[in-house]
Image 1 (cartoon, each protein chain N blue to C red):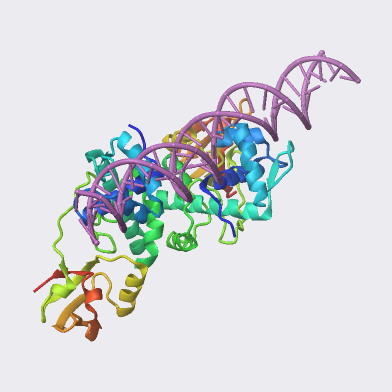
Image 2 (cartoon, rainbow over the protein chains, first blue to last red; image 1 turned 180 degrees about the horizontal axis):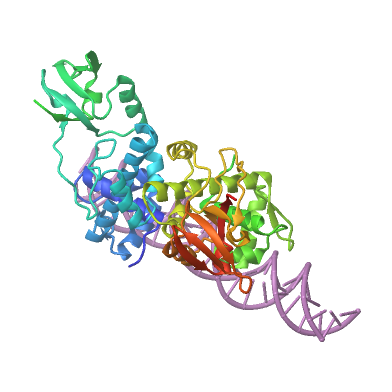
Length: 221
Length: 221
DNA sequence: TTTTATTGTTAGGTAAATCTAAAAATAATT
DNA sequence: AATTATTTTTAGATTTACCTAACAATAAAA
């Protein structure tokens, strides 16, 4: 069983995430942008990954992961998210400080390590951003999430995730106090601009539609 | 401030350890053996490290670390040992399972991460093998250790470290019950072969001189 | 349906870290 | 001191992942 390099793993991970976002084959240029490299380099790597049967690649037609490639990618996602839980829960790093570090930790390959880490963290089902953590076999457990801007006045819920991970966004949420696990109640969804007025810990908070739509809540009623 | 690559860090670390072992300049061949590479490759890297002012290098005369190189190396040692503490204390891995994993973890560069890890672990002074963990500024705290084979009959002490880290050796100690923190009392040091008879948890244990000399104890009386 | 724009690939090159084989410097032995 | 052995360096290749520039395929627009 040939092993995957740091670089190959990065490609697989990016292809995996892009496949999730929009269905259909993933394009060369899109991969290049996301990896921070040039299209020509991507083509080189795609050939290599295809040789290893990690992706299905047809010239000019984009790529998709094979079963093997997908399992590898999910393994990396699993490690990334477990490490994020560790960094936030145990080391008390903030939301927006963990991503880069987890990008490095995710490439450490030791089944024993991952298993013990998972156990130590209490086999978490989601990471600090609310993203689902796949199990050892690459299976995700369904979670039902609603976007905050889709709630109606009076509804309450708990913040369980975000669908936007930029540092700027996370810092903004932090400042507003809209962090994971917080209970909120919607006071009003303004029709004019889609902004949302809500109650958070007995205080009124106003957020724009753009901010609201990336907050995922577990609707309660 | 130019950054150091994974590979450069490995060289610095090995040079550091070899400098500790035997004083004087470190030889090209020795480095090659310890890194698992060929002398020619070492020469190439030495030139590079010298250009970066991380080592003092004179052709055919071996190398030594500069102040800058030493600080970098100690930083890596610090990370390695902190991670080993994490792996053993928190994730419950065994002595002989942690080294390889820590070899990878030690290359993750984030001051914030290291600081929080140190704090989380309770600012440990030694790693699971009893090796001293340097502080943030690269300072080691003196510990007074005696080799087990240098104790006399009747002496007691606590095992605080080992000076041999091979998996075979560690597994052997594990089997004998001679693990970190254990109290032992010397019954006799056999003059003929230097083997040591000792009492460990009310049981008599016999170990060869070769095994004894790598066990470090905190002599009590 | 041509033309234009976009997207993707090839060809040829670079830098990092490695290698082998041959040559040079140093050390050890006779 | 001369010879032999060891150690170290150079020279030239190789591999990986990247690059630019030129070309080819596909998609969009006129």
